[in-house]
Image (cartoon, rainbow, N blue to C red; front, side, top):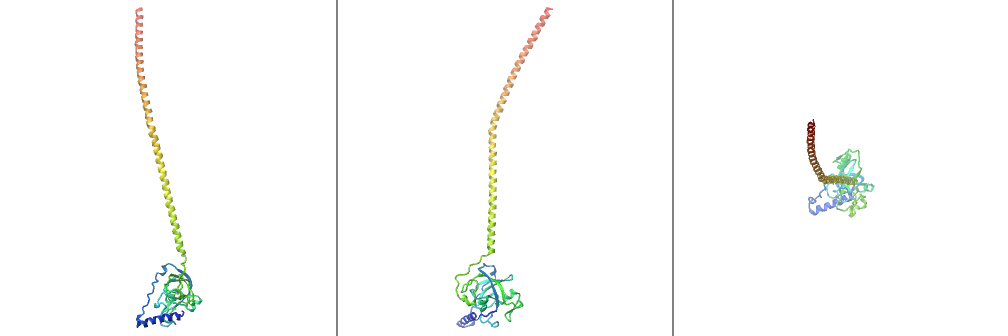
Length: 297
């Protein structure tokens, strides 16, 4: 745990002034704490690592601190202190695979930030991360082997609107917590997001190539079908051109055959008649010869 006398006293004085000015203790309206339950699902604006300590300031003075957190929001789980980030900045920490959301509601650590301790988590969150238990009497953490500092990775998902450094944390003594930062850190390249985008582009390209191949195959099949159809039409045209000539030839042959048959018939008849006459003549001749021979006898 670390002391935050300067910032805590300032917060207390502001609170007191508001209360006195209103004439009643109930006049102070506590700011609304942001909902950081979904912080681990938000876009990463900054990430890094640091050593984190813990504290719990309930303004009772039991833990050596006085006053409310600098934001005016009462101490609660998820409220963290930063020596330089703007108040109401949101994010989460990762420790041994465990994630815990937070928002910056206070200033600190003070002197320890000069030694690289750049984040003060609330005692309840610290207990969850280290496997300990929050002690409501001492406002400390029990059962975690005496751990008071742990190495964590931090991820910022939203910057607060007020003064403070919107980049990797620096020591409280630099005064960065009191200056407006108009040049926030550029969001880091999300390796996983880039890989996913690249994979999606490759899949899209492969799908386009597949569609193109199918289209080309369809075009080839279409051309082949048209070519086959043209060949069939061409063959049909040839057949149609040959058919009339064949019919003419067949008709001519049939006519010639018919005429030949007719001539043969007439010739046969003539020959038959001639033969008949010859026979008759022969018979007659032979008859006369016989007659003559018979007469001579």
